[in-house]
Amino acid sequence: MIKRMGDFNFKDKLVLLRVDINSPVVNKKIIDNPRLKEAAATIKYLIDNKAKVVILAHQGRKRDSDFLDLRQHAELLSKHSGKEVRYVDGLFEDSALEKIDKLEFGQALLMKNTRVYDDETKMEKSRFYSFSDLFDIYVNDAFSVCHRNQGSIVIPPKEIPSCVGLNMEKELNVLSRFDLDKKEKVVYLVGGAKIEDYFPVFNVLKNKEAKVLASGILANLILVSIGKDLGYENKWLDEKNYLSFEDKLKEIHEEHKSQLMLPIDFAIDKDCRKEISLNDMPTDRKIWDVGHKTVELYKKEIEKAKIIFMKGPLGYSEIEKFSYGTVEILKLISKLTKEGKCFSLLGGGHLSTAIDEYKIPNNFSHISTSGGALIAYISGEKLPGIEALEKSGR
Image 1 (cartoon, rainbow, N blue to C red):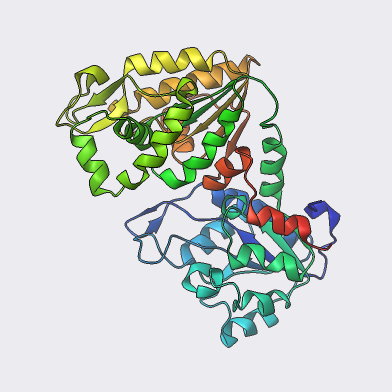
Image 2: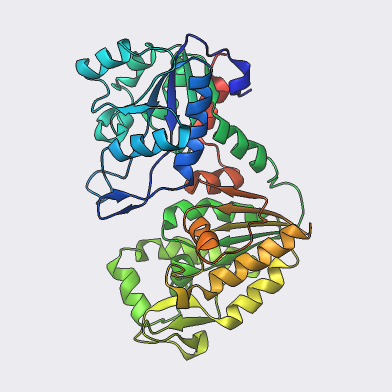
């Protein structure tokens, strides 16, 4: 059984806290976002309860443009928590360990980006084993990283008493609503670019009452895999190395054809929105959004659903003329939720931005800050981070 923060007395304890504050980056500047606010709530709770708090987090991946240190994050965490969170440019080094040793109760340190170190992935020789032993309690408030078998996620629960943080507890409570064995009408709207993260969602189709409504890169790739020539999009998918997923998606489509819905028209032409039917493909223009007919088709399915899950926009929603599909679907889900006709769960990020940008009433049951972990969990997969917490203290 996973323990909650309420199960522990944090007074006079040295606490190791793992959060996910991985943030959007524009011109090397961190964009403030809900993940930082959620993490700040747990930090404030621990400090108010007189703990000494050492925070682990990551930003980006090595060699990516958003792979930065966490100085800006510390400033934003301080702002949102109302507590001073000091950045330490180290983790396992002696200088960093000295700062941890001098930490006083009611203070917090944010350590160096964990992905700088091979200890995150090379588990056998990971220094997270000896590092964890310095602490009294481990708190995992990084649900969105729990699908990763990484040192800062799975090793501390093996070494010390552990629990979930406030945000992760809230996520798990909401996600308990998804029962793959319960035969009720569920609609999964899936878009976005991380194709490998979306494969688990097809597990939900063992419930014959479930349907996946695909959009974005996922939908375009499925269409290409079953022989549709989209023109420019075929070349673009090839250039971005997405075509390696073709065979697997073709198999999924053949097995679940009746439960998998794909766009029937698209918005193209960046200068002035123009819509084109799938039957009139190929085109030498890029696809920017789904078309009006697809939106109406998807709306009919959504209106039948008791549970609605949406992850990722239907198109390039950050560009207003290509936000139509995303905005129309979000408005409908918000309305149905307010009327008590469905339970709605949204995967944050782009959708949160769209809700704010286009002033969509936020009547949704829950907006998650997670991505791949969210999909894996509701699809019935075992998450290494969750399993580690379940075994902790046995």
